[in-house]
Length: 124
Length: 480
Image 1 (tube, rainbow over the protein chains, first blue to last red):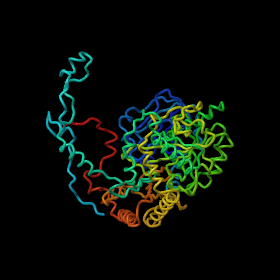
Image 2: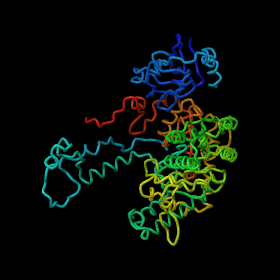
Image 3: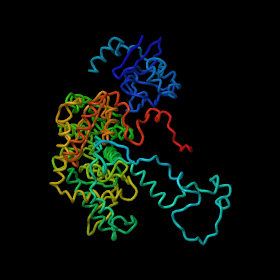
């Protein structure tokens, strides 16, 4: 199951683990991504709080965590190859995997259908 | 103005010119014996060889090198430079005359106060002029630039809270503030509380009120904001922040819209930096050091950095200020910039400064009126000194303007709108120059978008691969 935030992050849920990245729409509006700052494994995250930074040729943007929990793994290969975000935002450009603290939080995120509707509304 | 290829030759680095052993000057013989560095320092010598790697050129060679390089410059002295939020106004030549007067230029900062009276009088007067323009109790001229002024201001806010026995954890920074504002607050450990803009481009008051509490050290606010719009609720915002015991930091970078018409101190702002290198025509953007003087209200006056220039029998540096945050800059700041800003203020006078702001606003609105048919205007509210448009091909538009002899506007900022083009013409552009600027904008808007992807073509170097440069920067000179 995949969920989305208003800040254009996605969270792919398998069991109690959320794999997190930014959406294709997000990479498109950011432009060429040149640098990523991601948390170390073990770091505690809070829902809707900043977990990292993405820098493109246009701007530096904060990354907001869709869920609370603890970082299991960081995609180190992505840090070395930030262009993956532009090439495959929803696939190999996953950023972190998080052991969720409270699965009930998913209820406040958007489903794929809701997110697509949100994009249409936001991008007039 | 149409770009055409001029004598823009590729230029080697200075140490690729000349020849080993060549020198532009004959130095007198030294009385000390000639010794190799290695013999003197033994194992402590860190140079691999005794030869210093320095350019070895004759005077004409090195003079031509730098003069040729200078022709690559794109500057306010050569072209229109409507870089939004940066206030790239013309730097009057009389400022340079004043700044280079030997009595100012050759002053040594260690001279006793008795020998510095003229310089101190100028600083004292400038402090008072800025206090009058901004509506503040007192002014420090020390901070070296705008962000340094913010640093000084937030440090004073923190000190004032500490003096009350309080430690607060948050700082409100609206989305329409300058990017340095949240950075400054974060530097002091504050959690940044964002407030969105409403449909009119102004701070959303309901959201602001819902986020304000007694853990907020205050708010950092830019007025007019980064959309060039006047925050008309500013007095109420200040009043509310004060009711919660917080302080209001005003980012004075956009003061060029307000001089002589409204005073930030009168709104209730407690501390604000002035960018002498923007509003008061001292050089910036690589042209010189800045000066980010800060003005403060009565409540923050005791915390000003030391020394403050004071007047007794004569002028002196007041260092007996027990609540001061201390020094924020070596010596007394960038004095040369103070001379230039003082000159500008004295040249224009009160009426002249007001007229400068009026014309800055008029020029921005003229550009807005001429371009709104060609570019999307996200906020219809009347703008002050700068106007923000959006476009779907912002980067290409910016590059196309270069071929038409114009410095591009600020792009992709503010982040509130997507694809922003932020234009600040300033008051020093004539109607003819503004028309040239507008026509260049119109021409690129009507240009074939595919063709524009190749721009610029008239510059020494064409479109650079910015992503590649940022991803794989080559930071060390590569000898070819």
